Image (tube, rainbow, N blue to C red):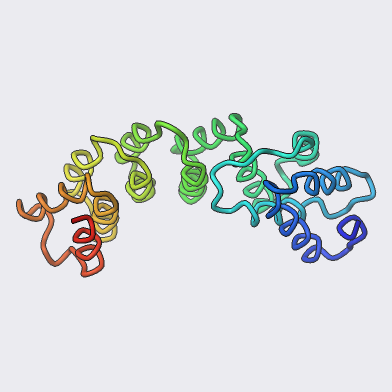
Length: 220
């Protein structure tokens, strides 16, 4: 009731955030909020979206409210970049396959703004789509997205990751080489390949920071 009466965007956003945090234990609260937000008199639907997105940030999956579909259809793509990003993030968390396909189209479109493509890939990776490592391998050849693709591979335990990344090292700058080290050091299965690359002098000893050395040693 308070959210439907509020004329203050930040208050409405915080109410939506608090309610969405209980999406698993009390989903009826969010359903009620979205019902209220669909009323013609409700003026702060965008604040509801922002609050929901903040509450579900970091979640890979969540069950959508029963009335999510009619609610999100009230928005048009031209409203604001921030609102569109939050809507897209929520669609991903709620398992909307169309959102996934749209992000992949943005990622693959080399004519689009570089940062828009990087943001699309980051959004994709936040939902950890299944069997996505082969797509990331392909994106290693894209100079705009190579850093994000290297970082994303840390999320997937794929047998070809070490080989692909070590082969790529020669053409990378310092920042991207550090991303490779970060990704390879993240798992025991790839950490041993990282050590082998150091022994073969493909990676210099000084490139392995104390942090990564401790991480590798923790694997035993």
